[in-house]
Length: 119
Image (tube, one colour):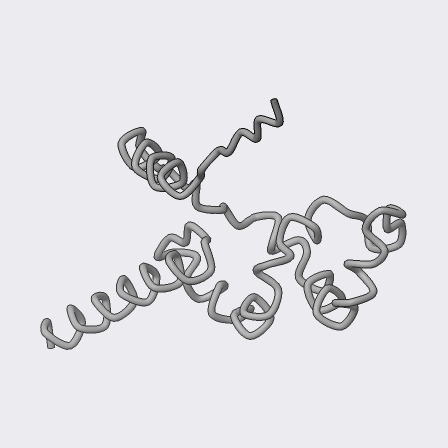
């Protein structure tokens, strides 16, 4: 009995960790069922999370009309669960300074500057 409960809790915690990595949301165990209920829409909408949360559905800014038109069906699905999306917490991407330095060094290695002298 205890082993089946433990397996169930482990399964939930593994799924929460997967969803955090895949979709970028902080989910707690108590919010797991609600997240699973909206998962089919979240799978399609997670790339447009900030757009859906920040923009009014009936007043799309002019500079965002092209994005809205290209992804009309997906964004409208997101507007159906907008209140839930606003409650979700996004994961902060923390890259430590060593990783940033390594990335900058790799980028600098590939860059070469040439000076042309016509004298």
